[in-house]
Length: 204
Image (cartoon, rainbow, N blue to C red; front, side):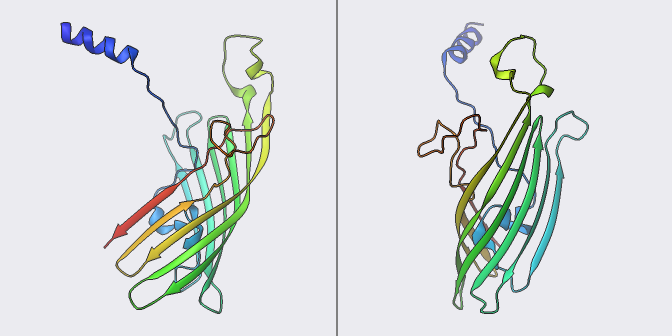
């Protein structure tokens, strides 16, 4: 009993920061790497297009719902890849729409291929604050019925791949709109969107 009491005392005094994911969540990234990494554009010897739809916790009100459509391919020179992505992510009262174009330059030899990519576009965020349930009237947080804004953004990525493995490192949202992060963009009445970094690799 004393150990249990000591454990609860310890839990009550420690400080833990919880961080949630803001980036749209999709399954099967190996079939749609352009969502994570602009350097993925043109990594196939053919033009590739995909549509993804994900519904998490179906049946629960406000559960996450995500749709994404991408297309990418190589130009005639076989060294430059171009891509386009549009996605929509809805969680609770917040809706996020991303529209981005990608450019990637590919270098290849007999053993592997390597590409560097850039992307640019914007994110449209809209929160229907009036749909939230609250019990304390007069709270200034709920004074705005709808909060919406457009956030321009840029991203970069690197991608190493062959027939047997691939690895990538990217920052799709390089600009931060979160005042708690360094070098962030300060907008009045704006959604706080943090800078994201991703790395992923697979060996066959």
